[in-house]
Each structure stands twice: as structure tokens, then as C-alpha cells.
Image (cartoon, rainbow, N blue to C red; front, side, top):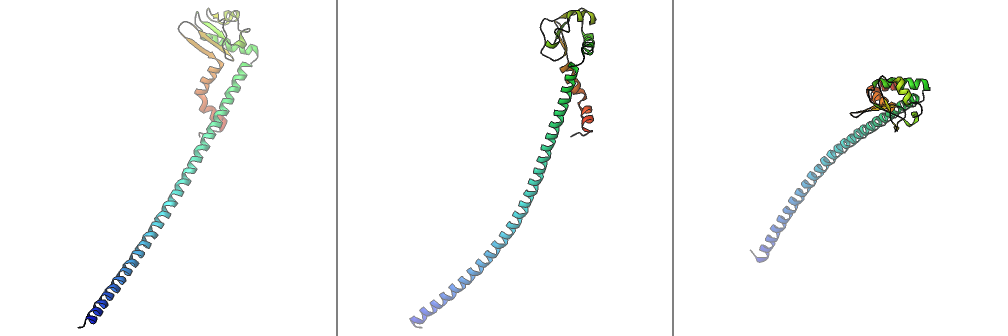
Length: 192
């Protein structure tokens, strides 16, 4: 064999080998591209499902948040109306005709004990006098020289305690005890 034939044979073998390698590489690249496309399609499908799930959760969360906000606003409105109702009751109590008002205070004096000092509101300082206490108290009472910063009713004080019988306190206590029933009357039994 001549040198040229040997070179030609080696080159031919190298070209065939290179062609085979190129074909194998192209086939492998095509397989990798198909696998990557399949993976990408699967990832897109999973991402779509995940996005839809997130949208559903966000919608549910938004709906829940809106419902909670609505419930808070509804409760605040009910509390406002209850406060207005009790505020109106307080105003009506302190605006009673003097005879009825004094009869109510006389009823409160039944809680007094011997030696109590009676504190009256600034508004009542000229109406509830020592003479009134002497006539309506069941025991010896003293009218305080200081006046309370409340709208109506009295406070009974001695060395051991202070008994708050102001209309504000009594109505607030009544509110705590009856708020559910009053809310049911005002709002038709809605418990939200």
C-alpha cells in the first residue's frame, strides 16, 4: 500500500468516525432537547396548577378577610347603637322630673349604712341636701362638702369602702348583665 492510500484510508476512517460521532451527538442532542421540552411542559403544567391553587387560596383568603372585616364593622355598629341606647337611658334618668328623680335617689339611700358620707353630683348639690338625707335615709348620714364628677345618683363612702351608686355606674353594670338580651331586641336576635 502506498503512502497516499494509507493516508486516504486513515482520513476516510476518520471522516466516517467523525460522521458517526456527529450523528450520535445530533441524536443525543435531539433526545436531550425532547426530554427538556417534556420537562418544560411538565413544569409549566405544574406551575399552572400551583398558580390556580394560589389564586383560589388568595380568593378564599380575600373572602375570609372581607367577611371578618364585615363582622368587625357590624359588631362596632351594634356596640355604637348599644352605647347610644344606654347613653340615652342615662340622659333620660338624669332628666326625670325632680320628684321622680329624688324618689330614685331616695331608693338608692336604702343601701347606706350608719355613718356613711353621701357624695352627690355637682348638678344635685342644691337639690340633695342634708335635710333630704335626714328625711330619706334609714340611718344617720352626712352630706359630703365635695361633689362628684358624675351626672346623677350618689356615692356612699365610709372608712372601709366606697359604694358607687351613680347612674353611670349602675347603667354600665346593667349593660354588662343584659347586653345580649338588649342586642337581641334591638337587632332581631342576630348574634354576629
